[in-house]
Length: 366
Ligand code: FNR
Figure (tube, rainbow, N blue to C red):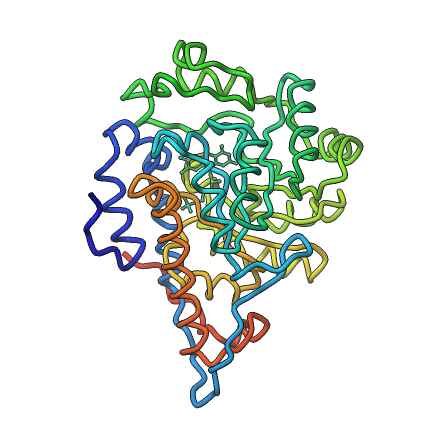
């Protein structure tokens, strides 16, 4: 039974992690190599202090914003993470329902344990919800095309092309544990059965599917030619690549370092965000993920120019803790914290959250 008092995401991390096997916990919670980037993703938020305006009537504070042309309850969405059934048997179905209930969007990983159709239907059975289909460039172009067609047919709004993963990062924990997908779970998107997945390590499955010859000039125009969905690039960390995404006509970028799971030593996403925002000068939509654990973190990312923030691991902790209810709890915590932060800084709409709401970044900590 679930009886701990979960007041914040740190509580949820502790309670959710306890319910996982050591292998699953390592797989979800770790970053790559020395864990530098995963830690900095969160530490970066603590470098900024909020500058509140007081004696503002905040009784009608409006947290909503627009993403993919539609209103969401607040500027947060759920990042695509693979293998959610390892946290709870309902996996992505539970996540989709929780997102629909909370009024936010969800990214669907290529490594889900349920099909896009099942995930869409689960969410829509609760209420309106939008999904982005996360995609890797695949060695098997026909498989990639089947995933795109299915996502479009099922009503996904966007392709999120993950650009930071031509190969897998250095995942020492997975290799030490010889991590295998637990028995009984398939990867239907990749048309892989449980037995087939378990016969290989995660690393070799990934290398067999992902095309390390992916590139801007081949893959973005190809995506445009095969789908009407929006095209976003996930995994950008520099002004140069922001300009490239604009030049290639992408609809948006997600400033992301894959939650510190790909190349360790790349910047925290909050530190990379300002150069991307500055060079874009409003010409492309910019979202960010990595290390967001409080409502004030969401506020800080918006103040630095992000339109919306996404969270990966908090969803997995919510699922592990209590399935759909746990993800609802995670979203409720972040919603409440974000709204309180807006009200306590005198912001009545997300448009009021500007650079003036933050001080200068303090130097890196020890
Ligand atoms: C991920 N992430 C990810 N990204 C992606 O594009 N495709 C995927 O299949 C996965 N799978 C995945 C699994 C797990 C266990 C984690 C933790 C992450 C990265 C994810 O979309 C997102 O960028 C990060 O999780 C954001 O950082 P936080 O919020 O986890 O700190």
